[in-house]
Image (cartoon, rainbow, N blue to C red):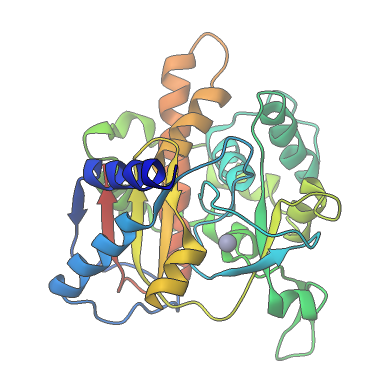
Length: 313
Ligand SMILES: [Zn+2]
């Protein structure tokens, strides 16, 4: 049995075609990956592929965050989970806003998030997200220098969603360039036209990051991970290998390094599931482009451009 499992793991690794890019070079955030030489990047990519594992169908999705997990909010342990910015629900929701996916325009901001969750939940998607230890200690409330307070859960993709969803408009050249680089042959500029920025801003004006935790029902489910420590991601892994992800916690434990992991196959799955109506084929493409735009917009908001991309296909 053990031999079989080892062989399966070997097979996954053998099948991964690794491409390593130059440092991304664009970013308006603080997370600094330092300077990773081409040689170190090669070694790192090898270690990443050694930690590729199959994703259990019942595992809830989580974020691209590279920090390790202690336990989930309900006290249960975690396992390898498909990873996209903010978790599957937030990535799907961001794309829904960018593409005008909603059929009911009278919903509150939280109602819109819930609407996406219910639609995809009915299609058997299991969603999750994460917070972090620091934010749990502070009861999801951050106090600013001027004494004012605001909600914060410790997931940048969620806490800074309003800012992130401005990036495709304020820095459209950067978002377009990075989306094209990530999608490569799958990129088509026809699908990079999103709804009006003032419309998006209006719909998410009441965004409260703690709503994500409420909608996911973290108290009674094992779907919100509590991550530990500080960010130190040195690379961004774009993983196209279906039904796999990087075992984040084992990777950190074995290597002492952190990487962001974007499971591109999961984005394809989400976009396919959300497409509906007579223009399904085009809508799926538009949703996919919007989801990738949200991944790179999150990167631009949180990071400083120092990380290298690693593509696994
Ligand atoms: Zn996060």
